[in-house]
Amino acid sequence: MPELKMPANLPDPIINENAKIVLQRRYQRKDTEGVVYETVKELFWRVASAIAAEEAKYERSTVKPAKLARDFYDLMTSYRFLPNSPTLMNAGTDLGQLAACFVLPVADDIEGIFDAVKHAAMIHKSGGGTGFAFSRLRAKDSVVGSTGGVASGPLSFLKIFNCATEQIKQGGTRRGANMGILRIDHPDIMEFIKAKERDGELNNFNLSVGLTEAFMQAVNEKADYNLIAPNTGEAVGTLNARDVFNILVQKAWESGDPGIVFLDRINRDNPTPALGEIESTNPCGEQPLLPYEACNLGSINLGLCFAKGRNGKDSEIDWDELKRIIHLSVRFLDNVIDASVYPLDQITEMVGKNRKIGLGVMGWADLLYQLQIPYNSQTAVDMAERVMKFVQAESRSASKQLATERGQFPAYPESTFGKANLGPYRNATTTTIAPTGTLSIIAGCSSGVEPLFALSFVRNVMDNDKLVETNPYFEAALNSADAYSGKLMEEIAKVGSIKKMDHLPEHLRHVYVTSMDIEPIWHLKMQAAFQKYTDNAVSKTVNLPNSATKEDIWDIYWKAYEYGCKGVTVYRDGSKTSQVLCTGDGD
Ligand code: CDP
Image 1 (cartoon, rainbow, N blue to C red):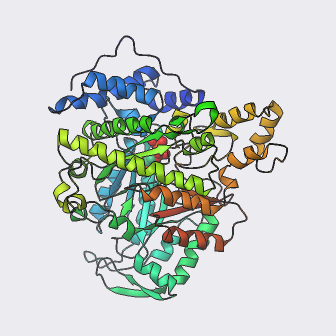
Image 2 (spheres, protein in one colour; image 1 turned 60 degrees about the horizontal axis):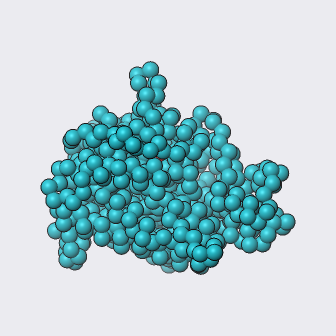
Image 3 (spheres, rainbow, N blue to C red; image 1 turned 180 degrees about the vertical axis):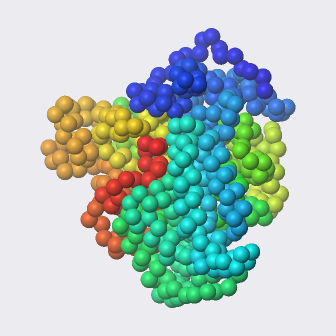
């Protein structure tokens, strides 16, 4: 690819204090002694130019790489859009692995299992996260043909994956993240459900139980269901679905683990069933993928798509600006696929067939604050649908445009799109809502589609650095209500929320809500609203107060199913001493 020279008049990016620390630690290039030799400006230019350079290979492209590099640079340094961390870290470098999400198959033999351990290690080294289904592994104590001995089962192998991950620091800076999934009808399911009972156990894994429609129906009917030996396909036992569901709920109440995913629903939305069945997601659950598939993500900062109406009234979303950002971001993410070097040939091949990208949003809570809409309201849920419908429609239209310039994704003819004759697309999926744990720090916005955890708080990042943060939109609102004072900020930083601060104006307490002020049902309704218009899945945690009961969690799990979510993660305040990965510190 031709190297694109940095223009002399390229403006310096404005960087917030938290971002400075994060970028320096993880993203800016360092020499062998660990000394940073790349400025933030050079970092963003490295990424912008490497991704734009891909444009040159498309003869029918209507955009000049140099102009595109500048547009990408402006897009990122205005924090309107950021690609996932591996793209920021590795674009334009020798490593060149740019995707955050991978799924690897785990075959039912020793060679296959250890291949997966090795491949995961290679992916973690490049900053990607891995998901695995352990459902194909034969149950504990079943016979091993080659030796006549007995199998150790999925759980014992999970521990090996966990251990291997522990020893590999991603890209020299962060530990790998994993998702482990087991089907509800696997004979070892009870052991799996209880696997994280002890704090710290399998700490490099998020675990999710793969639920099926048949199982959910059995829960509803209080019926028994069969456990199936994966190696023989035979029923080897039965459990009562309602009892198992109750234990799942109990464990989630105790520790937040395991989560649940609805496998049939994920496969209903599998755009290329002819290429295989989806058995797992990436570590944080937002990206279901086929075995050996990878996907790169990127997120639009909705907080910056706010258009103030005249006299402060009739404020709205700047839809034209959002559309412009979506189209540019889709081109960016499609180019990332070409620019990325994958650690395995099988992955290169699979990614090449589907060309999945995952464009999502962050800064949602910031946008709601500006629109003066409480997160826990039907107005906010309706707005979520409206925004995501727009993002999905425009990202698909951008993908169609790219297909005319570059051709459709190769698996298109055998895809559900192809079969329905929906017209050629460049990408088998275009939308995913990521947690944006680190991206939101860089952009200085609220993460993903989550409400704010606190209006003002002290954030622990990497190696116990402490960063104090106050939401800027809240601070502005306090100022304009003439309510700002240093003493008040101290008070708020202690509790995070202003819900109980009667001395503050009612409208502020109504709009500036935080995750703990929001009833669980609104968390779920919001997730479902975004899911409705998201091709892949939505990263979202349903936060519950410590006082939440098991019945509350039962209700959430069941409603997640009824509302059409693809999975659900709950977290009851104080139920776990150390939170797993992807909670905001990216560690
Ligand atoms: O903000 P950033 O791009 O760093 O990541 P994220 O949106 O919080 O997480 C997106 C995905 O990146 C996760 O679902 C994982 O697949 C991967 N990830 C990881 O592998 N290791 C981490 N420590 C964080 C994220």
